[in-house]
Length: 136
Image 1 (cartoon, helix red, strand yellow):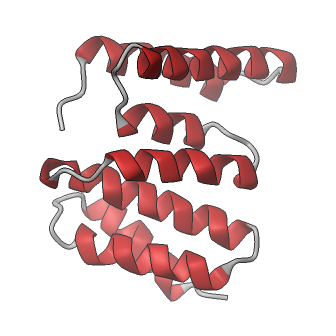
Image 2: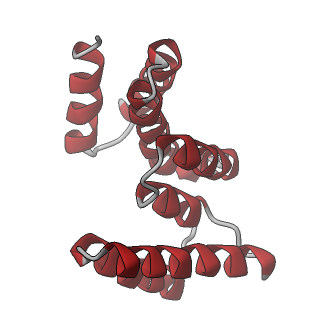
């Protein structure tokens, strides 16, 4: 699943700003700019799971992040979108666990783990395994 280089660069610029921002007002200004960028890309006909997964990653509310991840997952159906599906499912597992929905979290974690076996990203596979082993 091809990701446009300029889209990746722009989202990474936002990510860098968000990760390094400690003032709440600036964080939200940058978050809203990222959200506007994602929505503008979508309106222009370029909807990519990377956009919505990234926005979900910087959404502080678990309840608000879940629909963003579900949107991203819905776009990641192509065979070459496996890495997106795995990371999105894992993010959903973490968010569902955080809101106390352990059964749903487990479903997403197992689905992520099953498909992660076909990836070479050992760090992600380790994180998923640790998540599954740490069930509450």
